[in-house]
Structure formats: structure tokens, C-alpha cells
Image (cartoon, rainbow, N blue to C red; front, side, top):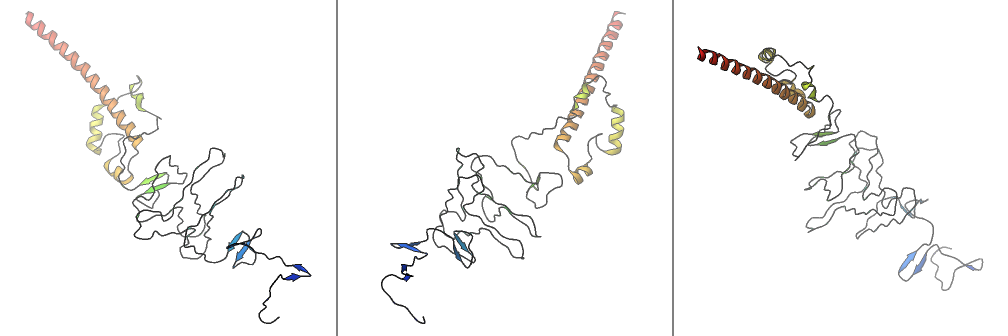
Length: 275
């Protein structure tokens, strides 16, 4: 047939009304089964789009899956390759908003389930030469804000104030750190050995000679060493405590010698008075 066909009634095939792929009910048009492809000949999902899609209003995604396998409400993938910046999900907050979110994720964990639950889950696959970010923020009052609950980082390392991770350290901070308390869990070789009877106190004259030559205490790092390598807080606390303990024992010994001299002086004065 060439041209338009205009008919009333049913369209028959072999005497049987043809069943359309789409059904309608009022203003709604729908399919009861199968997948719909836009820009794809063989859609793999209920709605499979090969191209750019836009929505002006809200996009509501519900994931009622209750099985044991992984299931995603929104799954975004940025394949490797190319030199431009790729975004799995990219959103921009419009100016002039009183309050709102450019990209907001809310989630709750039901006590009925046994698996892990994530309000937001981001995975940056390895590969390529560019920098990969799980979460990247800029121009915000808070790059990361946690209102309640614990923050858990299972990573190779965390850097603050720098992009260079120090080798062998989980946390690298370029700047000052303020805290109310700092606990260092390292009790190995704690200097209580200073109080053992077998421990020999350093000779004060030898210590004086070392200070004169090196301009710092024995076992304590020099100014140049600290400027170049810094110092370990736990190790430095042990060194300083050892020095305090040694000074305390020296002071006790000197006090005993002073008391002995005082007693000898008192006896000499008594002998001289009796003559």
C-alpha cells in the first residue's frame, strides 16, 4: 500500500483482531511486559536508552528488591577511555535557591535485613592515568558533613591539606591539628627499666661532655634531625620520660649525699663546740 490508510473498526489478521504492543487506559499508554529501547535495537532493561535523556521535573526511583544479590536504584557507570571528564551523576544547584540540594541521597537501614545498606555507594574503578574521585566537592562550606553516626574510612590513606600521601602513614595532614586528647597505643619498651637495680644511670660529666659537643641530650634527636624528619610523638614521649626518670634518680641520689654532708657538718660543729 502506498499512501495513507483510513479505516474504522478493527484491523484483522487472518480474521483475528491484531493485538497491539501498546495498551492504553485513559491518558496512559503502557506495555505489560518486555523491554523498551530508544536508540537500541535490543534493549536489555525495561527502559534502555542509548543517548542523552532529560527530565524537567522530579525523577522518582524505587527499588523494592528484597533478594540476596546486589540491586541498584540508580546505577551510573563512566567507562574508561578519552581525556575529558566523565560524570556518572552530575548535578548543579541553581542560583537563588533558599534551601535545597544539588544532589541529595537519603536512606535508612531496616533492622529486618541482614545485609549491608548504603545511603550512597560510589565505586571508582582502577585504570587509566587520570585522577579518580569517589566524591569530589568544591566551593562548599563543608566538603563532608556527618550529622550523626560513625565515619569509617577503609582506604590506603587519608590526606588533609595536601594531595601527597606520606609513605607508610594512614593519615597525612599538612597543617595544624587541634584535639582535646591524643592517645598513642604503643607500650613497647616503656622506660620503667630505669628503676631496675641493674640499670646504670648515665654519668653526669659524660652527659655534660656530650651536650658541649652536640648541643642536645643523648638519645634526643637534634634540631636538624627534627627539621628534616620530624619526630614520632610516642617515641619522643618515651625518650623524655626516660630523661625525667633519670633526672629524678640523680636528684634523689644528690639529696641523700646532701643530707649526709649536712649530718657530717652537724657532728663536726658539735665536736668543735665541746672543746
